[in-house]
Image 1 (tube, rainbow, N blue to C red):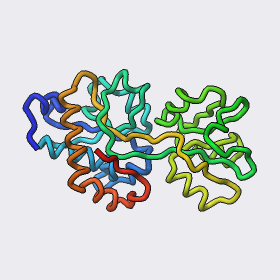
Image 2 (spheres, rainbow, N blue to C red):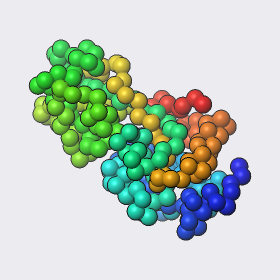
Image 3 (cartoon, one colour):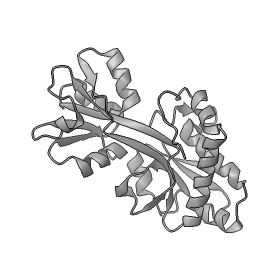
Length: 243
């Protein structure tokens, strides 16, 4: 893949591509290697971009996606692997998604909830991981239910199992684990949204966005991304977009 000098300078003016990585999404970051660098699909796609640029890569890690988003335009990262969300687009330009993650509701067997629309009612509380893409989606689309935020995915799940909220909103693969390990709960089958995991760039770098899009699309076309999903055991948990 050819890359112009202008795009290379626009993406990585220091000569090193700094990739912001959100550590809280267990589907995208599965741990760290012997050198402390994060492992998973998100770090892999950042390496793919750096290799296409023929530049060294440096990881800049964040404990929460909101903190990564807050660092946009502050010369902390050059690309930031983060979910596309309209509320973030005022500060970040997003690539095409490289994977999709479904988000669903978990409810108790005894609850009178059968569809997603049943949940947006007065008096209903929904536990959610704060400033996640699905938290932002719920803010924009649900008007009646009360959203109760926790600092992490794990803590939002604890809210539900401690009976502090009526409904849990979370990533479908994590919710399926909960249904396998706990009785008396069920998943509402239809996802309420599909989260677009993308590569973010500071605003006004459209040539660079087009280049990153081509890296993502070529990674899907040549089977590289499917191979990485298989390596990390995520083939059944993450969906690859079709372009």
